[in-house]
Length: 217
Image (tube, rainbow, N blue to C red):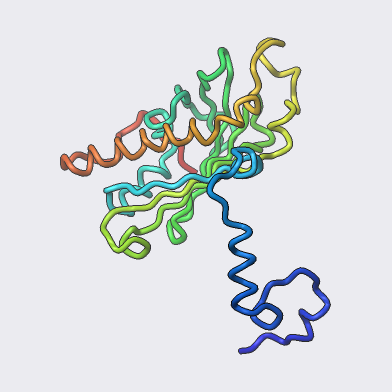
């Protein structure tokens, strides 16, 4: 089915074969391709990382969707326990002393998505959203294993604590203070995730650990 060109005619700024020749396209793409990019331009609003993992996608997804595994592969999330709200868990974020983090896991097996909806200090508005997806490496890289993508979006609350009165102390650092380090920090955590999954898979060990309780919705 061909698009109705009249529907698009009044929309400015479109780059399509109808209004751009191959030479113009190549020149425009060259303008947008640079040997180096400022960190803030790449990771200022969105932070996306990705990694290949030598572990079958079904096992990789099963591991990610069980939220108690956050205590294994993240740098600082520990001691999760259920709250009175079904599906909502609370634990410690040792990145900052005496900081509680609330988390709900939303997973879709068909799409391979695992989203962690989190927030510091309170569980009523889970605005720190960690979007992850498991892809079969066979379909995207032509090899066995998994590809994991992980995206964060810079919610306005990263720039200002919406509930300063709930902080354990006035001088506690805020999670948004670390935004410029998200790429580096998440890359280290993705390295943890890769190491755990590959070690267990290659050694014939159960990939998923058995928790006392599981952070799973």
